[in-house]
Image (tube, rainbow, N blue to C red; front, side, top):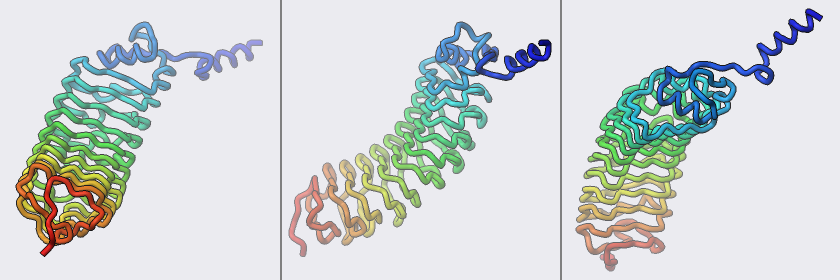
Length: 301
């Protein structure tokens, strides 16, 4: 009988189904309070470890958070969505997101981030959506997005980024939004095999380097509206599956011969509010099926 009792006590200690382990997370501050609420506990002194491990969504928005201490999300092993929007976060510690290997969506929009200087997201191996829009980002190191092999959508619009950061390794990336930044030129945006949509409107882009857009077999949409582009050069883009190209509200005054010859599947292109008013489709490399907006078509010489 005594042996059976000991065995039963041993099972209670080890089995989460029979005995619930509780921990104190009061030292996690506002984030700890949000976890308490999310798992329907009473206070931060005795929080169920099992409930924390099962939590899949956490919202800590509009809470005036300015830092994310290392390990602040420890124990949230199943977390898939983390919303930290509209806080005052300025710096990201490289260990801030430690343990969130199942995270798929991370929202850091509307914060005070100025730079990403280290591979702070490298451990988020399952991340599919990263939103750092509406911050004050002006610099992103070459390893800033390293490790995000599962990333599908990157939102970095409404910042002060002056150069497109390295996106090498983002083999799953489908959507890139860099609208309303401080970009002045595009040097390279290559070898992103899954990239389908690129939004670069409302920047200050004047120049696009020859071959800047290469090896983008899945690209179907490109938005370059509201920039400072004045001239379109031959083989401007080499993306065989591009369907829509928006060049409205630039300063385009000249388009050289065969500029769009590398776009055999293009369906729509627009030039509204540019300096150019007339265009010969075959001269610039556009076939008869392409819908052209914003210019008057003229006969080719």
